Length: 420
Image 1 (tube, rainbow, N blue to C red):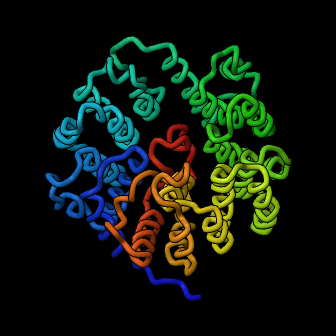
Image 2: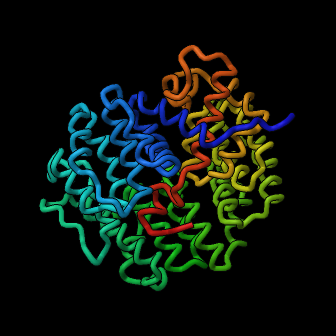
């Protein structure tokens, strides 16, 4: 089989046109922003401003514009236009849309992002719904976030955990016994630790004492399911590996336990380079049969998705495509994973892979799989035949492969200042 020809610029133009007519959904929010960022970099503002905004869902337009803003950070935000778009969003969706837009706009314009939020929903409502944390992260210690309203205790604890994790990543905390960290990492039950706090504190512990990074992660995994910490484990593995403790990460990936947890460690180890490519392929060959033995039918992707991620991280696309088709991986889920796991190269390789059609054809219809991703994707033509669905998937993967973000805005890596 030969690879299919996909021209990224043509795909960007095609997808950007479709995105202008897309409905807003939380699942697709960051993907829409990625389209805005990619189109902005490829074509400039005309690629989006030429859209007939009256035919576009306001939430979608706001995400496209916010995504575009991430690749022109020195340009002042058009607050008036963004406020108009935000106010056009139905009231029952407004906070959700703003929560995604905040993470994009705060990356380079934190003060203006908070000004926009306060103008549209007010500071009190925003804080009550946990808006402002991304703004606080990007303002930093030199210019603390001042929301102007009383903060709920859970938000205060989250701000403290976030700031502590950023200090650890910056190298200003020294060991797990540092008093700024030790109390926060105490028994999660006694400290009423939330999953959001856990995901930053596990990285804080790794950065403060890389030689015990895996130990801290294993401690918190006793209290939180692995899917709450999968993004954290990628960073933990990178911190430990950079500090010379790759062996500990590799050993954890080989430690037999709950298969979803072990597959997530495999993905983290592959991301960090703690396992060589042959080691990842061999580990995947061992874990894949266990997934079907240990998980109920229809739940294979709980462990299978991180295993496919591990294979894509090392460029083992043939193996990844085979398992994706076998486990009926929905294309929307695949796209989101590529974006959030930094699999740009993997997405580009998938876009041209001759066996991608098997993945597209195997994917369940809406509602047939717990990870199906909902209704027909906005990028897929109505009533498309298999060739049309395959072409749409190739275009989307090509766009994700061209996304210009080193790390996804509002991701854990972005909020903690942890670059590539």
